[in-house]
Length: 78
Image 1 (tube, one colour):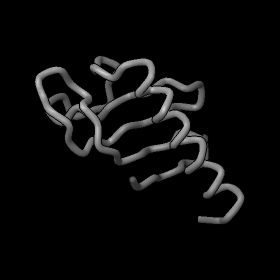
Image 2: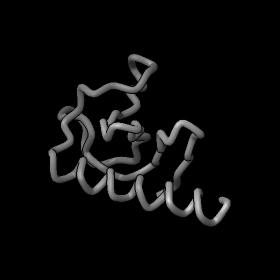
Image 3: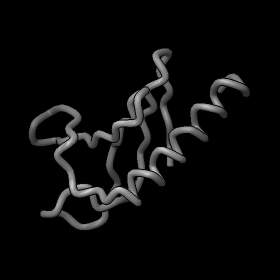
Image 4: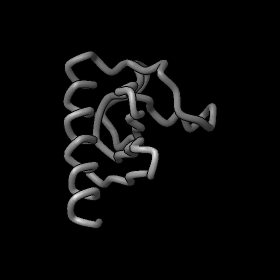
């Protein structure tokens, strides 16, 4: 997993997951917005989208990873 944390507290992660029903598990870019919405990069559309196949359980795990990345960057100056 890699993470990019913006100053507005949105967190971009690169993780392995099955983001779309037409694809298998692969590396995807996901964006966790300040309010907790999880978006996935749609390379066909060219933007982040909430139209994905991530379950609530998977989204909760992603939010937890994003919070950890945010804490690491905020408190450790990454």
